[in-house]
Length: 314
Ligand SMILES: O=C(O)CCC(=O)C(=O)O
Picture 1 (cartoon, protein in one colour):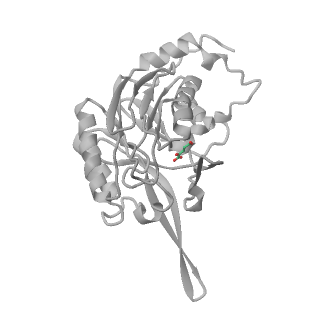
Picture 2 (cartoon, protein in one colour):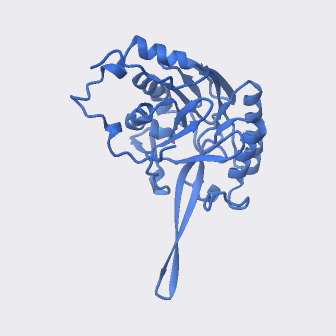
Picture 3 (cartoon, helix red, strand yellow):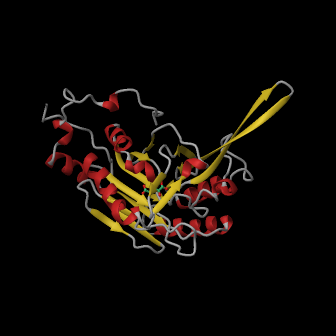
């Protein structure tokens, strides 16, 4: 239980992060154009890392996933295969920002050839694409934990009726700043992903999400603050704006929480761009004041982050 260990800073310089709480409707082209306007607005406010919501180019719901799905492989896909890929790349490049492009429904097809016939298998994922300030794709995250819940009389959702889960933890290195962890919505309920990403050196955990009117008021902010205080990192959750004419009523309340679990900025339910400055000193102060890192008892519980974890070294 050493208490004097020195640790390299995980955030190299202060950076502004924006969550774009986007109002999206059924028209994908209009959603992409509108997202581009809002990313520009976020960049004009000084943000260098911009986050879009889960399913930012479509309404959210199992009925919608197949009709809005885009094919991302081979990478880069053609414009016909994935207009959203190209729109996101242009938004990142035009504004010189790292863009965590919310998520989109992804269609992956595999062809199996049997005797005399071939069969095409379609698999759908909920997938987040992250682009560099020059518009290159840096990483993709397929939602690992599908949103299957049933709260009797209140709320039921089964993403697994249509979607398949991803199977890796996602982190990406932003050379000027440091490493961030990326996951999607329901993934935030699983502290293991967050803990492993933090122990692998992330300064922020970023979740495009779309909570609802049942679990949103109870758990959205609580989960963001929990992941932040457990790991002494920044946490950002980015929701669509609430649309009461849509089939799914998003909670909204996009927010950024600091490493002491204070909410730095939080939107209401309507469209908004919220911006917060992330500062590595705040991470170091939190970790110095409450030195969890040095007090861990891996002799009592093994460090699972040192074990077998599915991730690609960024
Ligand atoms: O965990 C929740 O309550 C909501 C999750 C969700 O909306 C999602 O994963 O899309």
